[in-house]
Length: 423
Image 1 (cartoon, rainbow, N blue to C red):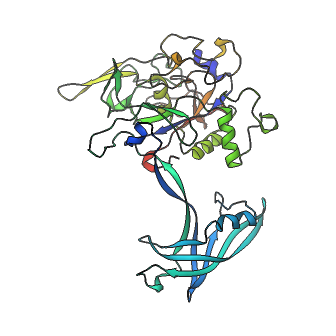
Image 2: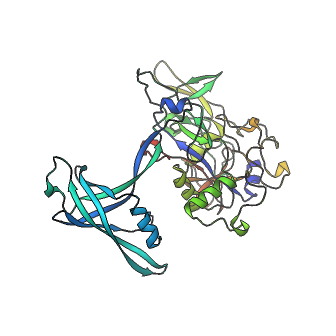
Image 3: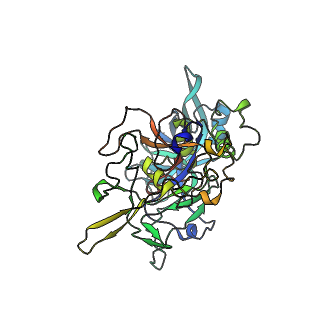
């Protein structure tokens, strides 16, 4: 099968998507620059003692902290950006006063990684807000610093001020990494009209080869009980490039892939898809960009569409009509639309070289060939089927309904707006 040749390239890509369940702002729909923002905690310090308006705040440094691995001068520079910090009361959380830093003391611990800062003690003075009693400024309260980040709300249930439902834009540009994203909606399109938008039914796998791991026993007899129901989401239009991945490495101080000589991607391949990425590296990139890895089913739907149409009958029963695609662009293979061994290029190509005709039904390009992609799903048998042998790896996708489990591939990413996890 053509799909199996793709895996022999032993390359990976990162492609990002935002998984979405509900609302979308009017500014985003129109492609405007005004975006929702929120304040995200950078660090937190517990008030340990207060006496006569003076006291101490302790910050414990753990892995992942903004202070972790930093030198004393770097830590002090972060803390001294502001002289005054708001004091907050717990349960319920509310502002009760201010803390002014007078002195910073840093404690260290030595472990296998060497000597690292482990605790910060801040000494200074406290003042209560107007109308707040001084005795509320006590041990058990805390101070916190924040950064501002862009947030998306869910793209399907947003109402404008006049209460009219707005439909998500089919494409928009993500403000963190600047990548174009396309909308994978619920329902299905026929002759330019969208039907059953609130229903995310999706027919996965294939029904002709029971010996294959991607065999779906219910492929030719779909019912509500054996179909996937996938909410709407956004996915990157193009694969993540070497240049884009390099930006992530620089901003996070992450080591480059081992095959990048001198820590740099191959000359002339800035727009080629990044490859040779492990699952954990792909996951880290997703977190940095404010997105997440898609499930296997989310990826497959973005690549080949719903795989069927359906209707609700008068007795409220459902009728389903399979109409799947073997490739993102149709049922006939075309080596000019899918960079596999058959294209005879024997290498990756720029993500922008792929023809628009190669796009999936939702407009995603590069869903066939070039490099394979991680998903967040474990490599498990489909309902009613069993695997030829068990695997502990995540599931890899490289086109349509195929499945594989090599050691190094890469993903598309998704992030749940319901958790406000976007950039």
